[in-house]
Figure (spheres, rainbow, N blue to C red):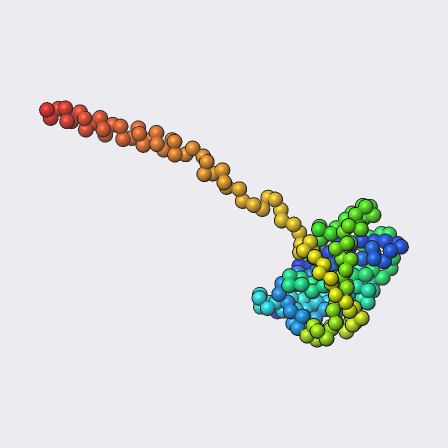
Length: 218
């Protein structure tokens, strides 16, 4: 039985520039080699299936998108931690998609990628910086060198390389500050001072009795 992987997403929109009219998608699947995965991009959806070498688990997800994309202009990067995809929206437009999927139902595995998310009314101020990390994303390398990945027939024209692009910011949500346990102050509490006083009170009468007994014996 396959498991549903965590999927992170963010988006940009533009009525004039296709490069800024995209959806960022990250499928979190560690240690899935190309020979054991399939990824199919169509005009209306994204379908993934793969088996993790280290976890010995199979993951699968089938996404029907809110609106159409252009698979031939979309880009994919396969890492040891996840599958990173930049989906090219088919229609130019200033407005954001109201959601990622066509279905309005909330999906437990689908989360916002806050590392990349920008509010719609603020994207003109930050889009260039945020998109720069994807600037050299050249799509899937030659299919012949990836173990014959099934389901990639529609992406044969996406040759190129990634130019050493750093995708570390796509790994997911940043760690929360409150997650760190803070028990370092416990060792500084003066608990031993009270214990020493209590010990002195309980042992003093015994010492007095011993001295008194010794005096009487004389």
